[in-house]
Length: 214
Image (cartoon, rainbow, N blue to C red):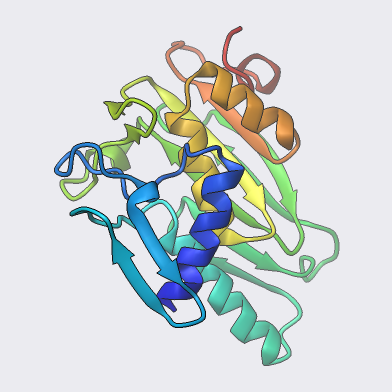
């Protein structure tokens, strides 16, 4: 299972041009994904320096992928799975037909909605720097891999993908990216990746908030 997870992380690390890096840890200054070595054939894992792997921006989506695979193997054709409010996956269409409808709430404005999405055989991940969940004592700081800076800007990222693990990694990458990196990721799949600037007092519209300012 670990080798399978590392293989998926290797792919999404390349997809995000290093913006998703589970080996970035301020306790091990300078360590990163480039210091991890693994061989899927022999199931051997090694590191060139002390480091820690944090699967927080990937693990729930990876678990959802495995759960969906097990359900599909058992013949399930329609299901909605939740690994918490920020990590969801659906199998097939809604029982009433069409996509499964989701409204993504503004994390700090009651009743405000950032975007509405319909999903079919897809996963959804939300990452944010604001809201009640960000104050949990076990929550690690969001780190930008390029300069190891702690990300404090008020943002919310939403990513949709066929893979739950990839959706989790993409939403994390969007949240920590600088403007140029975020723009590149959003432009790669503009109907599936969204980044919202929450520094405004009023809830931003999708058109206003999807992309960082140029």
